[in-house]
Length: 175
Image 1 (tube, one colour):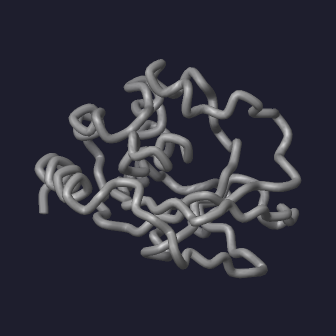
Image 2 (spheres, helix red, strand yellow; image 1 turned 90 degrees about the horizontal axis):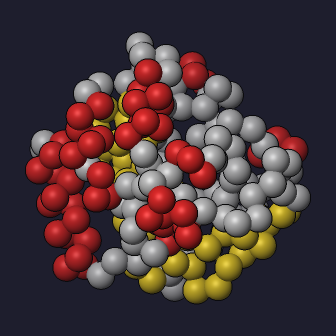
């Protein structure tokens, strides 16, 4: 997924919350954040074929000992949704199959699905990070022992293109 965000082919996140998240539901704790490379719940068949090139070819079943931070994101818009049709209307802005999204929305149906529109920025150079045991698992937020600077990060989409994207998404989600 990060590959699609890093290239501007994906502009939003769809979150329910990790099983290790407090209350088991997603909560937007930070408006700006690094995108933490993970293999949790990533299956090629969940992604539309035109995005398979963004899926890491070397995905393993075991968690990596090191990850590389390349992208940071700023939240532009957050909406809770309960209607799967909305995600179909946003298909131009994400990589997932309709079947995956339907399954995701059906999981714990009492919890809303949260759409987070993000503007992504490429770090000037990748930052290698040693994964600590407490960072592993299904969770939305991973506190890092050492901060990673986003100084000098460049937007993936220029201002004009991002405004257009935000306008398209807002037209579907509403103000």
